[in-house]
Image (cartoon, rainbow, N blue to C red; front, side, top):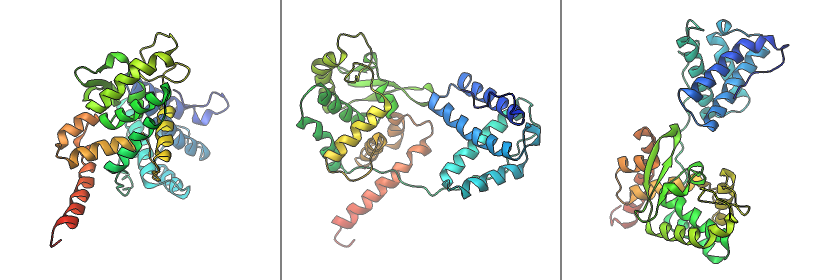
Amino acid sequence: MGIGPSSPARQAQRELCEAADRYLQYLAVERRLAPNTLAAYGRDCGKFIHWCDKRRVGRLAAVREEHLRGFLVRLHEEGYRGRTIARILIAVRSWLAHCCRERWLDSNPAKLIESPRPMKRLPQVLSADQVDQLLSRPSAGEGPTVMRDHAVLQLFYASGLRVSELVCLDLSQIDLVAGYLRTVGKGSKERIVPIGRIAIKALQCYLSDARPTLGRGRLTEAVFLSRTGRRLTRQDGWRIIKIYARGAGIRKNISPHTLRHSFATHLLERGADLRSVQVMLGHADIATTQIYTHLSRAHITAMYKKFHPRA
C-alpha cells in the first residue's frame, strides 16, 4: 500500500512519503476504501511527491500553495485532461487536510486552490435495439462458456452492476426464486437489486447446465467461472463485452459500464423515479444519478420532434 522509496539515500522524500503512507493506512482501516481506490490515491499523491522531490521540497512544512499551483500547471503541460487534474488535486488536498487534522501541518496549502472544471460528458449508452443485438449474440453458439457469457450479459443489463460487483458475486448472494441479488458496492455498502425474468432464466440455465462443467468438481462460491474453474476477473468481464459487441456489429467503444449506463437510462426513459434508480445503482449521492436525466431529456426531445405535428 505504501508509495515511498525504500532506499535510505532518498532522504528528501522520506517525510512526505511517510505521511502519505499513514494517510493510505487511514483510508484502508478507517474509511475502508476499496483496494483500487487506495491504489488511485497512492498514485495521485505519489505524482505530487515526485514533483516535490525534483524541486527539493522534502518536508511537509515546506509545501506551499505555489508548489501546488506549479504542479497543476505541469500536469496540464504534460497533457492531462481537466477531469484527471481535478481528481489528482482532490487526492492531494484530502491528504494534506488529513495531515492538518493529525497536526502534522498547521494549514492546508491546497485549501484555496480551485479544481479545474471539466466539461460534463454524458455517459455513452446503447439504444434498446443495440442492447437486443448484443444480448442475443451468445445464443448463436453452444458450450458452457457461451451459456456463461449469455448469463453475464443478461445480468449486466438487468441489474446495472459494476463489473467488479458482478465478478465478485457468490451463490449465496443470488435468490432466483425471489428474483433479486445482494451486492457489496463502493464503501463496502450492501444493496439489493432486482433481477428480471429473462436474466433469471439465463442464470438458471447457466447454473444448472454450464457451471458444473466449468467448476470441474471444485468447491467454490463464485457464480461466474472461467474455463479453468476459477472466478472471472474484471478483465474477463471487459473481454466478454468487447467480443460480443464486435460480433453484434456495434462500432461504439463500449465497456461493462456502458451497460450500466444503459440500464439506468432505459429505466428513466420508461418512467422509473430517480430515487429508485439511485438505490439500484448504489450511488451515495442522488446528484451522481441525475446525469441520466439529461439523457432522458434528450430522448424526450427526440420523440417530441419525431411525432409532434408542429415540432
